[in-house]
Length: 135
Image (cartoon, rainbow, N blue to C red; front, side, top):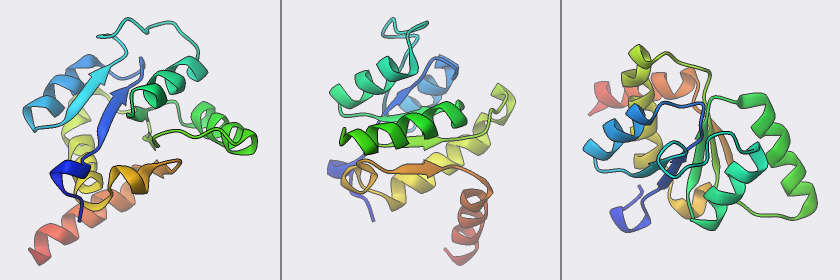
């Protein structure tokens, strides 16, 4: 189980509303958004470089591009703090995304996320549900 000291620091790329950053902060996350740091309109590589330089796991809906970018970085021997991939969700579904993120935060440490690419798909929804039933 991840501890607060090992907690994930997150960076939301520009395709995710900064409203999610606000909601995450209310739940105790250390999170910044591309919109908040002035990185709207930069390349995916620049997004990942910023996340890496600031020690933040990048969260994106841009699944295909960031999977390819992660593969390219791995081939080049470049490291990153981790990438969380999620299908595009409307703001109305951010509650579901927050559940998925909480499951990640309670399961994985920053060290375990290093250079990892994690899909926040339905398996996380199932795990959250099972965890609630078992708890």
